Image (cartoon, rainbow, N blue to C red; front, top):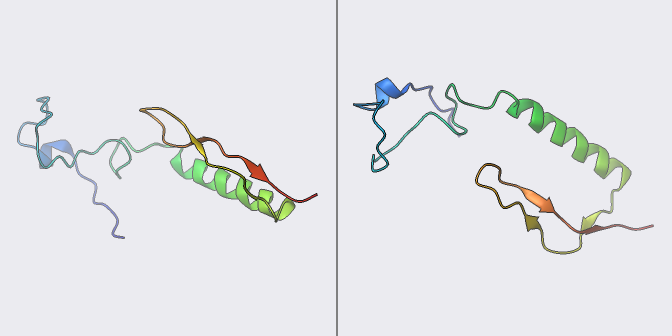
Length: 89
């Protein structure tokens, strides 16, 4: 996967200050791209999740899912709200 080039709206759009939902293609720089609006805490959050899962699997190596995930309903965050799990004694 290639690293996305940083772009600024002025170099991509003819009229960057005009709101146009029909603009196509729309390579905007917000919401997760490598642009200036990328979440500052994203790297820390990934490291925290990796550490938490590593510790969980070290302490409970036989953990497994026991049902379907319940997804979070949000227009802002994508994720799992609940995931039934089971493990041995």
